[in-house]
Length: 183
Image (cartoon, rainbow, N blue to C red; front, top):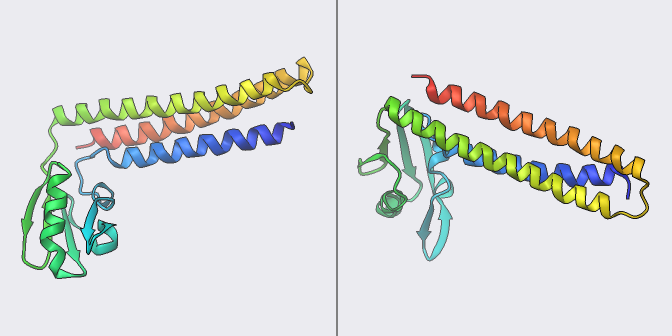
């Protein structure tokens, strides 16, 4: 098989890992209201599970507040219950036609805890990238059509791509960590 095919397969796997990492990072609370924290919550709406973003407008009212305005007022109580069931550390006030979610001010202790959580997520992403590399390396080593020199060349190119992906993950993590530690 050609190098481009191996690289394409590797990049596909690494992109999946990086996208998952970005998704996990949005769940790390930075002390500001973020619609991404609640927009994927599923609500039972006429016997079908629908995400909150499909059934309500979610807006940022202030740095620590979100407003959830359902398109159908009859589902307000259901949305409130779903958010409570999701165990998000947020105070919910029902204003009759909308929900106001107030996030608590983050303490230094909580910021350090979130930084540790970010570190765990970052390491999981790095492991995912390395796993993709390992799978591709096995394929290259088992390809009997390749000479040893060509295998070495392919493995070096694969390693360069992996290094770039890990560097990208580290940069994203540093930005998020800086965001977390900013008061």
